[in-house]
Length: 130
Image (tube, rainbow, N blue to C red; front, top):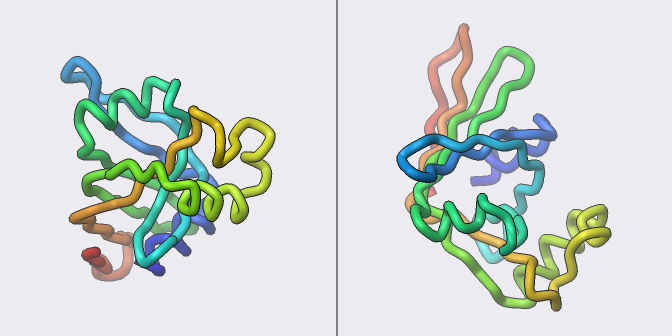
């Protein structure tokens, strides 16, 4: 899990894929944190991406840097606890311009049954399950 988080943080931007009406939807994200031994992302409850995750929690993330790329897939589980939201926002203070752990919009989600694979053109893939 830590290797996955570090890779995605180094990328700065990763792409999250969801599904809506049997069509893929992909958008850039940047938050990725570990809280209570789970890997979390953050978004707003008012966004289409959150509605898509509620309808189908199976997602995939992909990112690329320095000749290596990652694919992370799993199930996202919403965590509406103040403590989880506060941890995310404290680690990403720029989000506080739009979000607050006490608002009705902020949501954090953690991965369950996740598999992360880091690929390279010159090395064997590294696979992590968590």
